[in-house]
Length: 80
Image 1 (cartoon, rainbow, N blue to C red):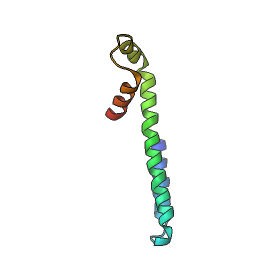
Image 2 (cartoon, rainbow, N blue to C red; image 1 turned 60 degrees about the vertical axis):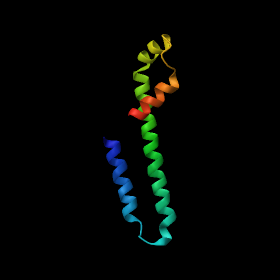
Image 3 (cartoon, one colour; image 1 turned 90 degrees about the horizontal axis):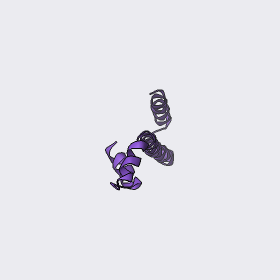
Image 4 (spheres, rainbow, N blue to C red; image 1 turned 90 degrees about the vertical axis):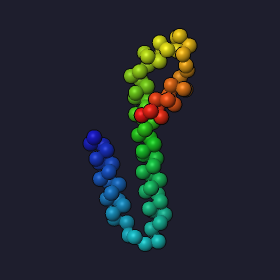
């Protein structure tokens, strides 16, 4: 929760400090790009940590040939 609060604080601070002129469009687009990449990385990291916790379940289901790793990862990412 602390990291999310810090991320929101600094993002708002950077956005607020930018002048609202056309000369700052590149900087504004760069900040939007950073926000999108950060959110995407947060989703992937969350999925990977969940995947590590559910490894035993996946091994059991792979042993009985239910499905593979990729379908499990995609379904878990989409549901989270």
